[in-house]
Length: 209
Image (cartoon, rainbow, N blue to C red; front, side, top):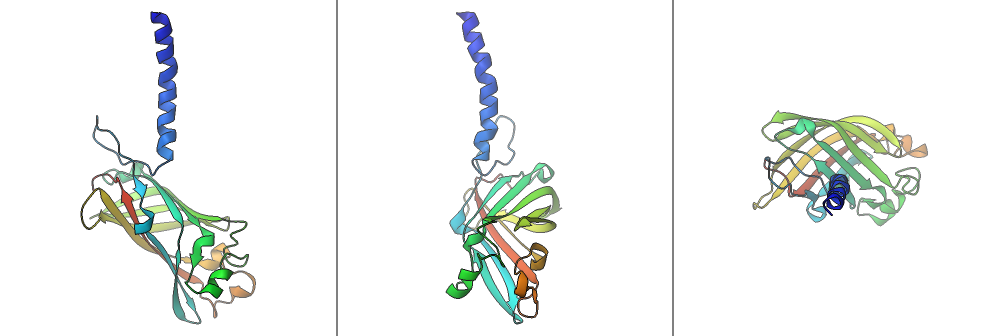
């Protein structure tokens, strides 16, 4: 009986160790905590988060948003160099709030959502700059084209307290690097090449800042 019990324990222990990281991947990952403490899952609060893109059409700034996106964060603000951040954006959710323009964005010359339903960012290095500011280097992929980007990010406790943090930042890309606005839309006198991306991500269960 004792030998049978020991065998069962040996079988269960490796399975338990395997399931723990798999379960963590189903949620936004955890920030590091003191030894002996239970980690708390971090998750994106979508209705309190926003991703905005600003381009110029005929020289006039026009602001659009992505309505659907998700993020996975394994990040300890006190030891950021060991962290990772991943973001997935539903390209079909892009819109300016103008029905005619919004109907064009998922089509092939722009985001081609039928063939490339997601754009993504995957960090490769995170550097602390002090005072709640960080620099995240990684790959931004749009329409299957990956480019290296460096994203400045500020992280602060959310107003009102609670176990929430808000990550904000902005960076600029060239849309033609990703073939967004292909064909006749490569004329940058009509739609500018430069696009500013701004974001505010509200995270629940984030580690202490």
